[in-house]
Image (cartoon, rainbow over all chains, first blue to last red; front, side):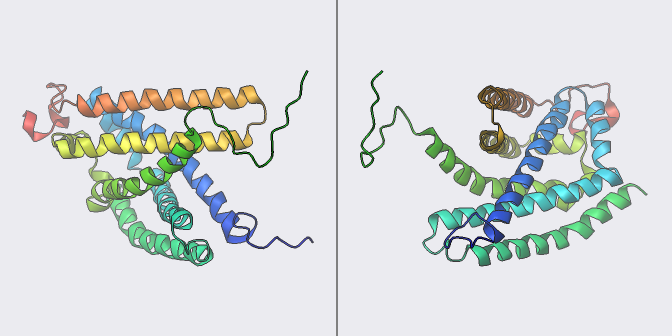
Length: 127
Length: 143
């Protein structure tokens, strides 16, 4: 197998996979945003219609979907900070690999804090 | 036909503004602001009382306060343009036929513009007492 050229940020390993994940989470958040603007717009149409759609957001299945959404937002947000640091911080390129794992750690810790509370909210609503 | 070969070392000539550069800057600036706006949005709407508490009265409680109207409209514009520009980057990467790429990009910006107008109107013309007959769904200010 050909040896990877040195000093490549985006080919192979963390640099590439963080980029792939950034795209996937970005697309997922984008499509949620489209739906979210439309469902919120129902507050201008009819309170009952809005509450009806919101009832769907409170179901257990969509509740798990919301966990996925928050996970995607957490990764995308902190990896975005990593990208900004790579672009603007003098040592950003040098620490990009370490910063990726810091991003994963922060996202994971916040997710671990959010998930039980969110599931408690969802399941207590459905009981 | 005469073929002109540019001198390799000559600086690149541009026509007009460098939109790719502004787009690149926009992604980073809006991204930084969106971290504050969206995390604040999630803390108030999902973390505090949970998704179960969100209904018409909840939205009315927020949007009778101009602070949250400004917050949400700002979030709408920044996030939708950020997302649309990101999607444009992706179609530019993967759409191989020029007409497909152009059609997708035009569709993206049309949808972006329509939803920005819709969302801005919804948040700024919001009426908490929209239907006085639906007493059960209305916030206390209307009763």
